[in-house]
Length: 160
Picture 1: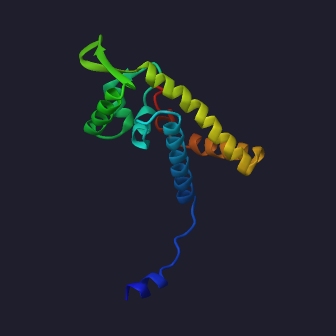
Picture 2: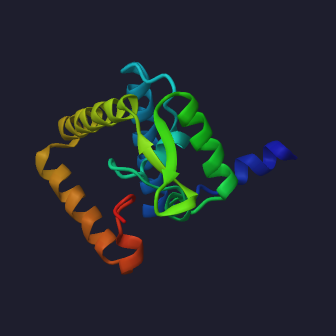
């Protein structure tokens, strides 16, 4: 009976959301693997998701929790791990005694520099696969789609 149902299952429609999701997951996996290969064994996709919300000059922990759009506990757990790895440090906020500032350590800033280099390498690989003109068109189309969203959602992670 199960075999019969499996054989009769219609293929899911091929739609832009699915293609964007697949491309995003492939990019994230390639980036995370390259970061680990570059000597950042602590790097994971979950940690990358949080680091993307921390500007290079740091941020208040409360702002990070808001930007990450996840639970305070999840952010705290990721921060604990990144701090234990020496990537980030939390300091008292001089403007709010109860608050904390999240700052990159030298190790964290080195990882960001490696990440910048790796991102460009991945882009070069994409250009090799689809050509400069198609890559430029892809980037333009993605910017246009992003520009069509509301002002609050257009804000780049960590830009506050």
